[in-house]
Structure formats: structure tokens, C-alpha cells
Amino acid sequence: MVTLNEISQLLYGTGDELPGWQGSEKKLICLAAKTFPGKAFCVVKQWILIDLTVTPVEREKLTSLGLLPMTLFAHEIVLDSKGRFQPAMWVRSNFGKSFTESCMFETKSTVYLLWGSGLRKEGSVGAAFSMKAG
Image (cartoon, rainbow, N blue to C red; front, side, top):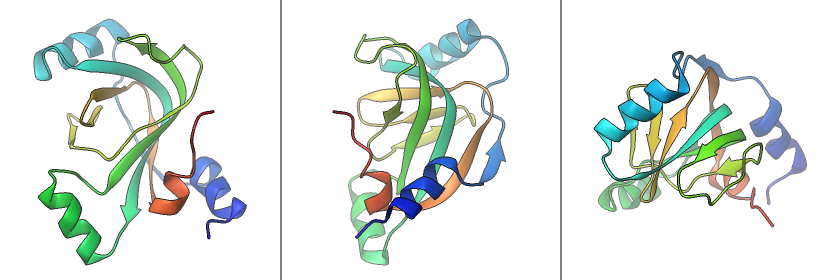
């Protein structure tokens, strides 16, 4: 069972700082369009890249599906290209497919553009996926 303390540490505890994209939002979007043409994107701030603690069997299953044992949580959405999320909302992604240029986290349907510095942490699958909107 996931505890409130575990979720609180994941959201607000310390982690390893990562720089993310330090340039303009426009240049970040242009880079994403070149790297992932036609793919939906979501610009986020105050983000946490979560390395999921998984068993070797779970890791192998994810790898066989072309997925990483990683997910992303962002405290603030800046812009969603498909209008799925409103600015200032939070978002938690599905499992990642790639982490590119230290500022783009790709899932099956979306590229999350990591604007400004964020954190990288470890967390359980239960804690990370317990955060759901609605």
C-alpha cells in the first residue's frame, strides 16, 4: 500500500537537480517539432522525472514493449498543443519511450518539453501512478 508520506516525498522531497531547457519557449517548441515532427507536445515547468523502482521481470516487460521504467510529473503545464490540459494544471505522464536532449520526455502520444530546471527522483510505480486527475 502506498503511504501519504511516500507520495509527499515524491512530490516535494529532494532529488537530483536537472537543468532542462534554459532557452525560450519558442525555441524549445521548434526543437521538439524537428525532433518529433507532428507529435503532440506539452510544455511543462516545475517537473520531476521519476525513475521507477521495478523488478527485473517488470523491467524486461517494459523494455519488450519499447518503454522505459520512467514517468514524469509536472506541477505546472504551460502549453498543451492539443488543448487537453489547461495552463497551470498539473500532469503525470504514462511510461516514457525516450528522454532526449535532457529536455524532452517522450511517451506514446506526447512529448513533454521540460522548460527550466527540474528534479530526478526514484519512486515506486504505486506512488507515481497513484496521482490521477479527477
